[in-house]
Length: 135
Image 1 (tube, rainbow, N blue to C red):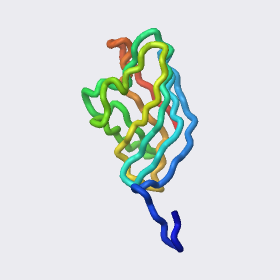
Image 2: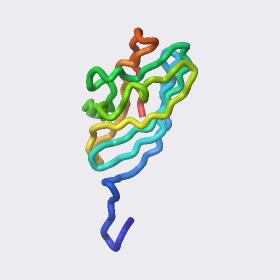
Image 3: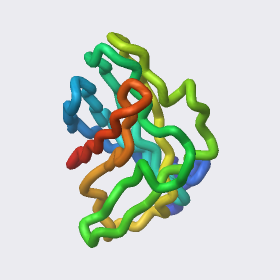
Image 4: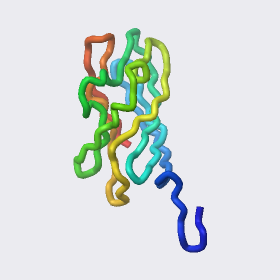
């Protein structure tokens, strides 16, 4: 909302960017649909389509840094994994899920995010794969 020359910022909201990027690996498709930018963090909305005949887990929540975004200078911004439960990151075989992933990245108009990385996707409780999606 603009009042005269001043701008009113609700909940430190900066803006929304539509993204249409996806990658399929081990029969698991991860699609980034959009980014919501706030002053103190960013949220990436993703869709996961599990065409594998096994359960897929995007992260096991055992350590930080398995899911991150990276800017053009190679700086990584890790996700806020303490806000999620195992069930939210687990997709059963043949199902789809929509997940909003929050990242610790303060707004900086000169910093451009170029990719989102899922470094330890777990397929059927054993096999680990990595997926990088360029946005």
